[in-house]
Length: 82
Length: 218
Image (tube, rainbow over all chains, first blue to last red; front, side, top):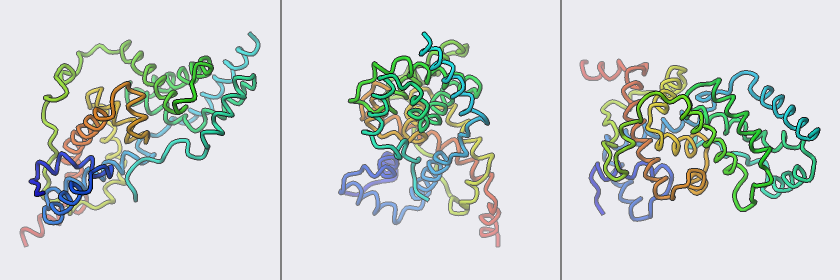
């Protein structure tokens, strides 16, 4: 199986999620070995996912947890009283 | 550095969680605090990515947890508690979105799934010049948040659950009421749209970009 760039792009996500079947995986890897353009697309997409998974990208507001549990406490107390 | 978010609620075995839920339902309501602790972030970020407003997201997260407490008896053990909670959070987010939505629907929403625009990535020529340290930049994280916010809703929902929250495909499909194939398609498109939107920023922000020009002009 020989893939051109556009076909490889369609499988970038599947490749990153390790979901390609063995034949397709081999074809994609073979393409990536020699294609700098597709390798760069793969790297940049992977980096975006690394950044996405970084806890600092989506930070919780200061005091969020305390406020949440205080409100829950009031609901739980009210629930038990009722 | 591996790809993918931390798996949620992994410190607690499903059996432990089920036992905790049984005790809460049997009257030990205080244990609800403990039950939801691993999911505080999940619920907040899920709603934040939808409503795009921190105060609104925090209020929505509180309402989600209160709703989960009040309806805990309706939770069935065949789904994961986290998936059930996300479903409530998504509904809460959608409800708030409907309330505040004054802008027109994303035009892309009316197009069909199969034929709706360009999902090709940005082609790079000097990516190798961009050091990983660029990912440490605060502005870039902010830029990513903005790019996620700009995604059409159906792509944003899948991206949030899969790549931010770390739900697997089946859990994401269950939380959104769509099939796994659609999860894959939407996730791929979301990632490609983000890649396209963020790459120019990465390139212009990357220190050492001059290296590219030096190499060419020396």
